[in-house]
Length: 119
Image (cartoon, rainbow, N blue to C red; front, side, top):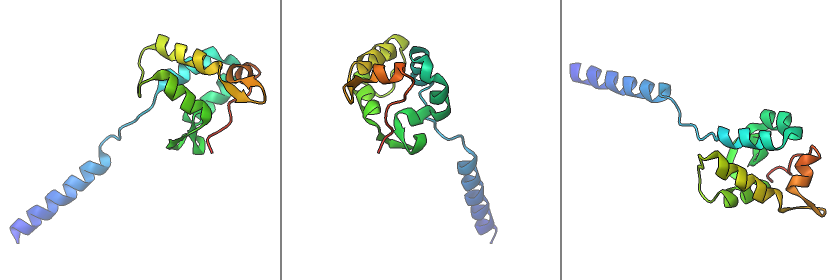
């Protein structure tokens, strides 16, 4: 019986530790900061949406990307770019891409409109 109680205590303790352990965050604050600095007219709305600028369900679905998010991921070339100059270059590259209706993403953003959300 003592062994069972010890085993049960260890299982409960292990479970609690698993629940209380810090969760891994995949946030990319450099991306949002660089985006907001480059496109000041949409910076306030972008800071509200955070990941939702590129990701679906207002940023909750990280697997779903908007066309803008896909273009940015392609321009970055790697999953977690940490060099600000590379992020800025990627934003410039994506800004030149067609956003539809004969406008580029830069045209939209400079006019104060965020790119269409992920579908």
